[in-house]
Amino acid sequence: MWKNGRNRYGLVSISFHWALALTFVGLVGLGVWMVGLSYYDPWYNDSLALHKAIGIVALALALAKIGWRPADPKPALAADLKRHERAGATAMHWLLNALIVLVPATGYVISTSEGAGIDMFGLFEVPAVLGTSEGLRDLAIDLHYYLAYSGIALAAVHAGAALKHHFIDRNSTLRRMLLPRSPERRKD
Image (cartoon, rainbow, N blue to C red; front, side, top):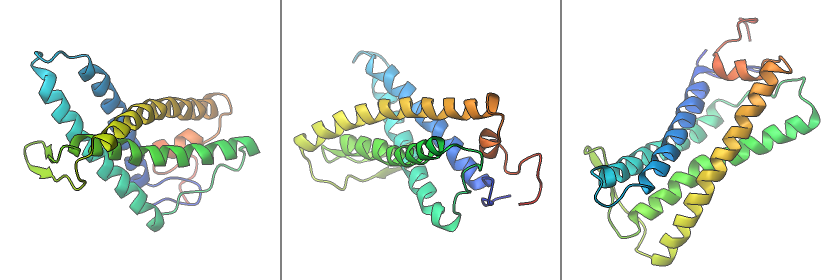
């Protein structure tokens, strides 16, 4: 139940998937909201601090997910997928896995580009490890913006494909990521 089987995801993989999905949707929503705040808004500084701290949590989750993968290989794609669906699923997973690291990593570069660390909810500080660089900061800002919105677009396509497989094709693709064990089959 905790680890992946041949044809289903385990609870650890499912937890990483949904925690990262919700975190990224929340971060993009927070990011869109906070850039519209004026300097005099009471949330101006607090929303940025919250965005940075949650971004570090997202990066830690992404690295943990990727680190978990060798110990728990993902299940095979559903046997009834067409060749182009297999290629699309593989490409989508590679892109989304790259984005879950690159988006918060570029955010880290932006946040620490002036040499200050990131306050983690008042508990501790994640230090700045890169030197100060305005050019690197400007590049990170552009990358962060475009990668975040690309990630949301890709996640929407990913979710749409899962819903298509569930409601139109009526296969187990979506159920594999919702339940640790398929209701039709208890053994794996």
